[in-house]
Every structure is written in structure tokens, then in C-alpha cells.
Length: 283
Ligand code: GLN
Image (cartoon, rainbow, N blue to C red; front, side):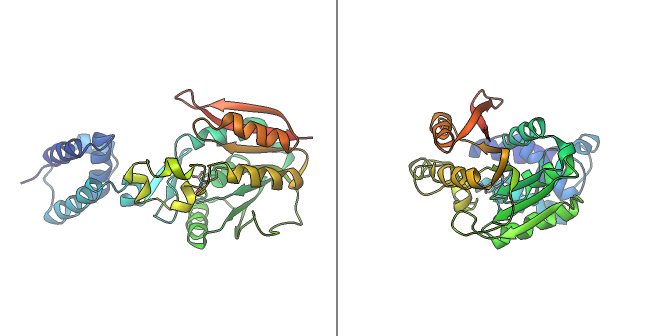
């Protein structure tokens, strides 16, 4: 008979053998999901025996994680900026660093002004929904080229009761999308991994997350160039452009934004002291 505690121990040993990061947290998330309870509640039921069906579900979860499938795709959700968001393999899994992008925008925007916000490449809708919940009178436009991603984002907006978002499927980089609007804020966390670096990323990312959400198939800067150009035209006077950036990209992106006429360009570091967010004003 397998108890909660012994199931956790077995999973932990297996994950450690496989070199899975955060093995304990992963084992707990998967078991809590199997038992339909909160992670912390597991500690109250260490001696509880698992039913046969629960053992089977947990076994399948463990096997999937053992093949490096991200735990968020296995359970079908993740947490971002205090919100629970549905995720599946058609969207990038929202990262904790991206919360710094949201935080920076919230610090820089005057909520009372009912800002018009454009989120380019919205994926699961994480950035848009976090902004929508915190700036209720903003009007947000969230664009993604992937129809499947927009579907996930719309579900997430509905589940989180975010009503001030317009979702649009399309390629704003090469088409004249939304060209009747001017924005106070444009934000993007674009695919910024260069093709050379992409090939050395962990299989957790390359085998499971959508490739077009991670790499631009070029030097990693393609979307910063294109989006800065679009933003220079489509921001209102004194509108602001915000990007998430990857390791080592800050001086290149700074130059791209400067060349497009952005001023007062500032950089924010993440918890590992890596330059992670860059933003500037279009005067
Ligand atoms: N905006 C989403 C996020 O920040 C998706 C980004 C992307 O797919 N590159 O997670």
C-alpha cells in the first residue's frame, strides 16, 4: 500500500536520479494535482493511502516529468502575478521574471489615465491579464499570431474575470493591424533566444514549448528591431515601450530603442541581477 509520504519519496528519488530541477516541489505539485488538493494539504495526510486510480494517475505524471515535460503542462496551469493561468503546449509557460515586466509597467503607468495598452505576442495572456486586473480602466489589445494561443489567453481572461482586453489573432510585425489606434503603452516579451543559443537550451524547453515563442531563428534581436520601429509610430506622445530582454541583450536593445528615438531608456534587473526589463519614452 502506497501512502502519500511514500509516494512522494518514490517520486523524489526518481526525479533526483533523472536530474530534474526542483524535484521536491515537482513531486508535491503532481501529487497534489492527483489528489485534487492543495500542495500544503499533503503535509496533513502523509499516512493516507492512495487509491488504485490515484496511484495510476500519479505514476503517469511521474513518467511524463521523467521525460522532462514541464510540470505546468502536465497539470495544465501555472501561477503568474498571483493569478492561476491555464497553459498547454501551444503557449510559452509564463516565467517569474516576466512578473518584473508587469511590475515595472504598473509603477510607470498612471492608472487614472485609462491607458491604451498593446501587448505584442500575448501567448497565454499573462501580461495582459495581470495588467488588466491591476489597471481596471485600461483598454488592452492583445495580439498573437497563434490562434491556439489566443484561445488559451481568452479562456484565462474569462476565468480571471478580466473584461478590458481585446484579443486579436494576427501578425502585427508584418501587417497593418490595429492601425487606427495609438497607444500609451506597448509591451512585448518577444521570442528573444538567438538560433545558436536555442540549440543548447534544455530539452524541457526545446521538446515541449512552442519554438516560435522562444527563438526568432536569427540573432535574438529581430523582434526588438521590428517592434521598436512599430512602437515609434504607434505610441502617443510620451507613450512608453517596455520589453523583457535576455541575458546579455541590454546594450544592443538600448541602441535599437535609441536609434528609433526613444528617450530616458532605463533597465531593471531580475532577482539574479540580470538586466531583464528595458523601457523608454517616445517624446
Ligand atoms: N507574453 C507571453 C509571456 O510573456 C508569451 C511570450 C512569448 O510567447 N514569447 O510569457
